[in-house]
Amino acid sequence: MNAFSLLFVCLLVAGLAARLLLMRRHVRHVQAHRDRVPDAFAASIPLASHQRAADYTAARAGLGMRDAIAGAAFVLVLTLGGGLQFIHDAWSAVFAPGGLAHGVALLASVGVLGWLVELPFVLARTFGIEKRFGFNRMTPALFAADTAREAALAALIGLPLLALLLWLTSSMGELWWFWVWAAWLGFNLLVMLIWPTFIAPLFNKFTPLADAALKARVEALLARCGFQSKGLFVMDGSRRSAHGNAYFTGFGASKRIVFFDTLLDKLNADEVEAVLAHELGHFRHRHIVKRLALLAPTSLALLALLGWLIEQPWFFSGLGMSASDTASALALFFLALPAFTFPLAPIFSHWSRVHEFEADAYAARQTRAADLVAALVKLYRDNASTLTPDPLYSRVFDSHPPAAVRVARLQAMQH
Ligand SMILES: [Zn+2]
Image (cartoon, rainbow, N blue to C red; front, side, top):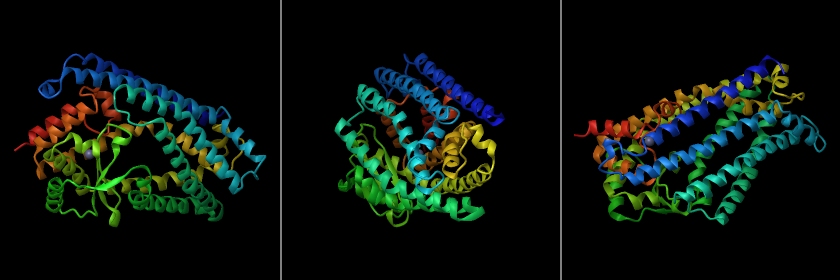
């Protein structure tokens, strides 16, 4: 224990407390507004749907609070509780400590333990809450098959990547953190490139959009917006969940547009076009490129920081370790980092909401704002999204603007 331990524990506990208090505020606010549909939605959303959304929000927040507590406890047990040092020592009986195999085993163990801690919450969410509210379509067999595929992917791609990163740290001299950063960035771009064509099809079936009338309209919209795409696909999202969505994926030659079948079932052609125009707005405003442009220098700065921390004995002892090899430093760094970055959450949420407003404005110019409003109202209703989030909670956590604000802005843009 040293001053750094104290700072870390204070930030971790303060972050957890802030998260729990905000979630409780959110649930109370939603429940206080449970018995009246906000005026803007009174004509389109029945009271029963509004109440179902309130109950769904409360159920999810309740589980989210327990999940946050378990996550913080996991980090504390591994760091100050000596868990990571214990894993380090256990693997030292098998592999040479500080070596490549030892490092990969250590980091993979942390990954597996983190997954195990998260598992009960995933199960409770999928087979408890989502099932209770009629959203879950996942069978236990499909869940097991998904898990097996994810584990195989993690082993096939994750383990060699970890080995590469650890090898770079030991063979690239002083500036190893720069090479680790370059490899990490290259890996991320590669995943973005191969995800739509090689990885996503392992989990879902993608079929070209067959509805000729809808296809013609979507293609006219794409031409109008000057967007080149390598295809329009429908994904069988209904295999796992009743929630609907649409997204863009890949870049360059692998760029494609994907509609969940559940979205196409719910929305008419005008509404699908408006939702797609919103997604095109993200593309037109280069939101993904801007995110990458922020992420790349940030991750370089973080790795440079790690390059410095790894030389500081107080970093290891402050986080409960007597060993001081690279793999341990990596594990400690990524376990401790969220406690230090949590205060930035409101900034990133704000930035994301600005992007959503920009994409909405773009959709309102390219299609009709009223169609996007109609689509959003259907999605809020069917996805049981609350219309009355706590304003402070929403400011800190929400990537999308509150329903009432978003719809009011779109209605003001209507011409
Ligand atoms: Zn959006």
